[in-house]
Length: 60
Image (tube, rainbow, N blue to C red; front, side):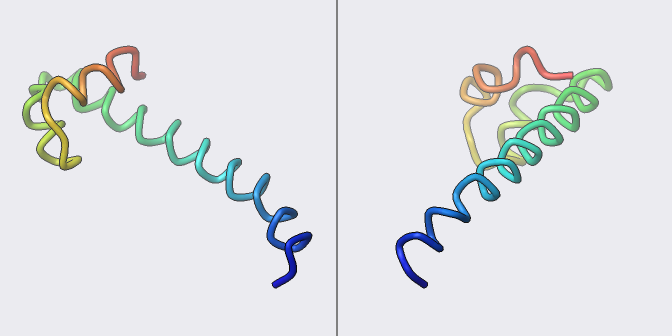
């Protein structure tokens, strides 16, 4: 793959990453609406409770 081809793919990958982040936030929001603790959310994502809260506190 040439440099130009590689660079042409970057916006596509960025768009997919944005969609994944949006959906992940929605799922975390649903978990929190069900009163799933931040500790459990963090554990499911392989991060600390604090990191999960910082990343998703405004989710939904």
